[in-house]
Amino acid sequence: MAQLSDIDADHVDLPPEPPIERSEPRRLVGTLIVWVATAQLVGMTLRTPVQLEANDISRWCTVWSLVERGTYAIDECPWQHKTQDKVLRSNKLTEPGSDASLLRRVEYMLAPASWKEGEARDRVYSSKPPLLPTLIAGMLLPARLVTGVPLETMVFRQKREPRNVEELVEVEPGRFETRRRTDTERGYAEFPAYVYYFKPILLLWNVLPFGLSLVLYRRLLDRHAANDWTWFYCLFAAAWGTYLFAFGQTLNNHTVAAWSAFFAVYALIRIVADGRTERRYYAAAGFFAAFAAANEIPAALLTLSILVILLVRSPGSTLRASVPAAAIPTVAFLTTQLLAFGQFMPVYEEFGTRSYLYEGSYWATPLEFDAFNVDPEPWPVYLFHMTFGHHGIFSLTPIVLLAVGGLAMLLFEPRRRMRLIAALVGVMTAAMLAFYAWNPKARNYGGSTQGLRWLFWLFPLWLVVLPRAVEPGGDRRWYRILCLVVLAVSVMSVGYAIRGPWSHPWLVDLMVRLRWYALKF
Image (tube, rainbow, N blue to C red; front, side, top):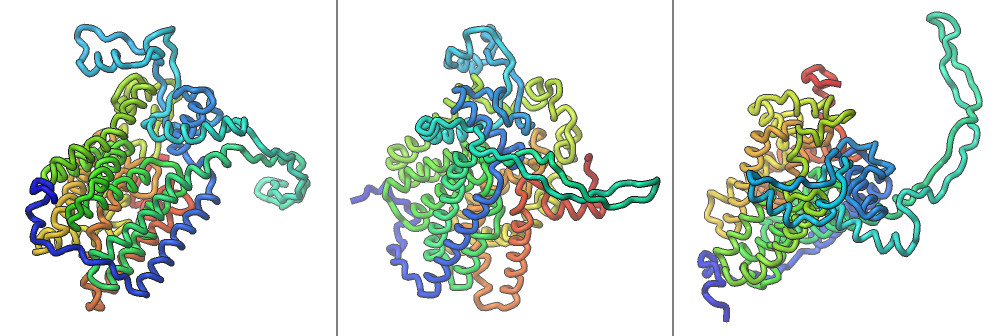
């Protein structure tokens, strides 16, 4: 028999969880949505170049260096010139003096010998947290050893055949003619080995969790969607209505953090709203919440909040399952930080120092949105564009605005099962908006990116409270039409991002072309 400490008093009087009875239309349409969306993301991932922009290339460089050189320094990586997301810093630590902080002394004491012995040398490192590239490198190393093919090898290289081309030639001032010629200097068609190594990684880290999250979200809707309209709408929104779909084709930490946050909150809902007491849910909540924070550091607030909620509900299960599970990704994150940089703090905390402003660095002369790192906008302007402006979570993906409405409904109505979850989502939303509006090192909207990527990990949390906002559309035609318009705008924004997730949203392109917004080019 469960002890009283293992039961939330607020849920003692809840009836047993009813069995899930999914209707035939739900079963068929739900299966179609999950399989079609996942298959489409597979196709996008296979079609899209592995190395898209500076952000993902920076991580691939660390993967290459670990597999091919056994080091976190990316100087020798053949692709490192394609990314500006890197730092130049000494590969040795200076012994801390008597006035050094306690943290600095602990870091020096724990740092591996490679960071304390030998002659110091400036090396280039990726500015991205090293845990994710380390995990990927560990997965690739066996394949690399078995095949013996280096990641940078061109497995197929063929000289291109001559081809007829047309070119515009100025025959006299102001008069041009089109002339044809045979181009014999067309170079080579090359097929790099890293495609065969990296594509499976993207499928494993992005596509598989995407499909699994849709399956679990469908189960959540079985328990918490009030009608068929809500069930179908929310599942469709989860599949195609957030930027997670567009970013699932490229290596990044935001989708990994998002799936982790969803798995953590799903386990929390099973405990808090559905009354489950199995320790596997406590372990899953702790592990995935901490792994979300390891990939998106501000998500540490989610980790702390979930652990506090679980500790109040069941101290025994939390201490025996959640805390040890959360310790695994936490220790892994700190260990890889120490191995890569000789310190626990992420290296991008050194932004604005010599690490970034070395000779020839892109960050010495940043352009477009990166220029706001040097000359930031006032925080009220930044907050507006984060919410309703050119990078707005409400303007680009207005289903989030619907979700906020659902959050409010859950907080102020006598439905107890999801009230605590709604409060958690509300705290996370308010805290992240406040943090990024205030943070002087994050005033560039994430650089060249579709949507405000730093908030992507919140999409699954917003989807959790979305059903309550959509529910009235089941019997109100005008409200259903409004919800469809909102979904259409969100899907359009995602569609605009599919061909180039590391590019400007449609609102930015529109405003710049109409000269409503000025950027440095």
